[in-house]
Image 1 (cartoon, one colour):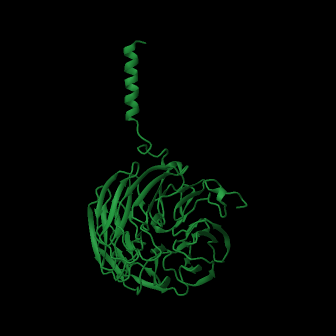
Image 2: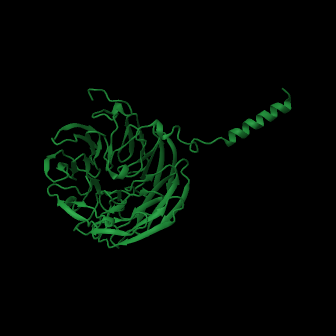
Image 3: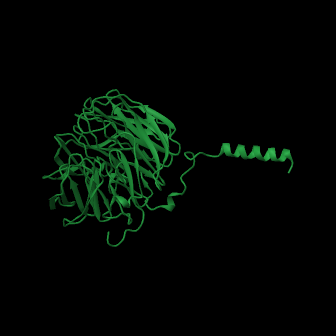
Length: 432
């Protein structure tokens, strides 16, 4: 080979190397078809139901059973989201309010990319953090929100690289406990609720550009930390369901923001998110760390001439922060002080009410016929999702947590204040 040929080959090799994608630029190593339930795209997963049929999540485990456990910068109360082989999680530094967004590989927990955003500090009040809202994710983008008394920033990052694609300021949020409502996705829109003491709003932005498609003002009495859901009523068109002190239960056309119906039934702050189950919408309100009201509502269907109505009210030990979860005709309410009750969805009859102990800000999720919930002290309590009460396991995560478990791709992800852990991925042994 001549000297000129060798030089030409070297030049071609160096050019190819320079043009090769970096690790962050590479697409996920497999397609969605390679994984069961590959995505958990919003707080509490699809429709906010907090449910998975994964067969590879153990009932009980020890610290030796984690696939990986990695530290996170700062402190976080949010829950991750997952798309295929990537998990996205936020955190923040309490001292200076710097926000972090991380993309991790689901196989080993390594950091694919990380972005940091300096923001202004403000008085958060009691028992919260600058990072409380969970992100949302689709095939192309990760959507992140934070707010303070001067602004509410919603931004979209490139899912593969972390590059900022667009950023919008939706206005100030006046709240004594920070901000906790999370974005959701519908068709080509990302939707954000902004109830606060100065009033309220809900807005839909175009996913690709961040342009506001519609914005509806709300007569909010106080901040709502709940995340909306999109519900498909029988015989009707999709509805965007929100709750809040002042507006109560409200149904919107998610494409236009037109209000379809409203039931202003709440006398207290709404923190837990609404849940759709058995054709009904369940939500609670409360104060002082305890739930005070909870209703089962049948949504209105204007195109069929059906008005919204309260079907029944639930009493007893009600959740304030945790969102309920359902299994068939059973509704499970996990309250802030560790009392759990099982309710018949069609009738409101209470089958059982038991104290499991602990204090809770995280919400339960259902995996097949089991319930998992993380206490503020960092203990996972596992119950049978059944008409009879059965405590199945208690596992210590060894660090406090205000987060909700995530299940995607056959794995469960557990987030504490400063760590993220992955569990499962294989069929559990018969004894577990």
